[in-house]
Image 1 (spheres, rainbow, N blue to C red):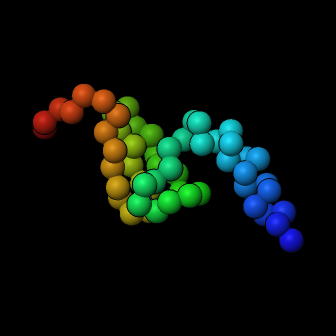
Image 2: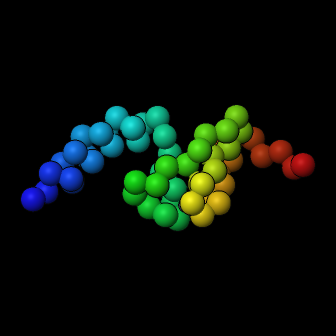
Length: 55
Ligand SMILES: [Zn+2]
């Protein structure tokens, strides 16, 4: 039935706090954490954590 949804919510509640979801891909797609940014391995979307440095 909805066991998949149930399990996702239970796990997601913990995981989401540590990882960041991709704003483009939506739920269940997490972004890889780097020292200064988050990057989505699926669509390549990048979010800079803080302090924009022009390179
Ligand atoms: Zn993405």
